[in-house]
Each structure stands twice: as structure tokens, then as C-alpha cells.
Image 1 (cartoon, one colour):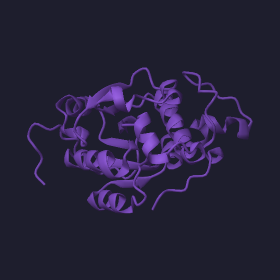
Image 2 (spheres, one colour; image 1 turned 90 degrees about the vertical axis):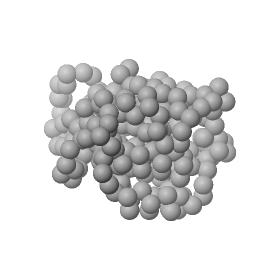
Image 3 (spheres, one colour; image 1 turned 180 degrees about the horizontal axis):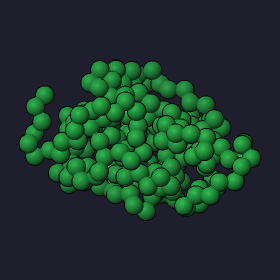
Length: 225
């Protein structure tokens, strides 16, 4: 597909994995209304996703990954971030309200995306078969490489398989938070959540969040098919 001349052109997609210096995070519509629709107050069911989103934001803050968060209109009705996510939302993160399901159709969001110095996006949020699906298609159409964090997605739709297959067939790359985190860390020498396991004391430019748990300790995740 020929790129729009007004689009940022990220360049050839030769990258086969996530690159810390070249990846941003797109957090879509993680709002109370969509939590309620997806989980109907079942805290045990939502905790595996919530825990991963909390850690995704902590990782984005510590690694200074560019971050854009969207909120579907009307925010007065749908709400903004749940308290646990608000507490760890990175200071450098950008927030936008959108009316379109595909956030890339919003001129202000599209321009914000194009201004970020990245070729890749890790995508998380809701709903898998609506705003996630359409926004991922939008990012792919703009020439970005998309890593879909499956265990950081949720939806009220019991059967999310068709939406996932459609995104993967279009070029999105399946991923999980654990894979994403370890890929960015690259080695045991730069994986601060392993330090207590390896009994070593490594100095970092900024303190690593004490509340960050090893991904292996997260509650089990069972996706809707």
C-alpha cells in the first residue's frame, strides 16, 4: 500500500524484535466503563490484566519509553485511568481524548504519534475487537511495526480470536508483557527485577521501582478465545 505523503515514514521494517531505543507504548482506552463491561466486577478475572498494565507503566517510566494514552469520549461517562494505573502513569506520558475507534484517525493523536522518535509500538488496552483492532490497523497503515501485548488486552467480547487473527494477518506481532520486558532488558546484567534472585547489587542511573514484581510472579492469565 502506498504511504500517504503526509505521513511520517519510519523506514524499512528490518527490525525483528523490540528495540528499547525505538519502541513506544500505546495504551488505548483503559477506562472504568470498559473494565466493567469486560469483567462485570469480577476482580479475580481482571487482576491478571491489571497487574500487567501496572507493570507496563512502571517499565515505561523507568526505561523512559515514549507513551501515548487515549481515552474514548465522553470521558465524563467512561472515566479515565483506574487509580492503580494513575499512580504509576509516567510523568512523560501524553494523554488524548478520541472520538474515533481508530486513534490514528484523530489528527492530534496522529501527529503526536508521528512526532515520536520510534518505528515500533507495543499496544495494550481495550477493547481488543474494536479500538485495539482499528488502531493497530491504523499504525500498520502508517508504516509502524506493532507488538500486540495479548495479556495486556481486554474486551467484553467472549470470542476475541477473529480480531487477533485479523491483526496478525495484517502484520502485527504477537507478544506478552514478559517477552516484551525481557527483550528490552537484553541480559541478566540489565534486568533489575532479577537482582534479588542473583544476589547482586547493581547501580542504575535511576532507582528501579520497588513495587515491580518479576513477571513470573504475576497472576495466571487465561485469555478469552
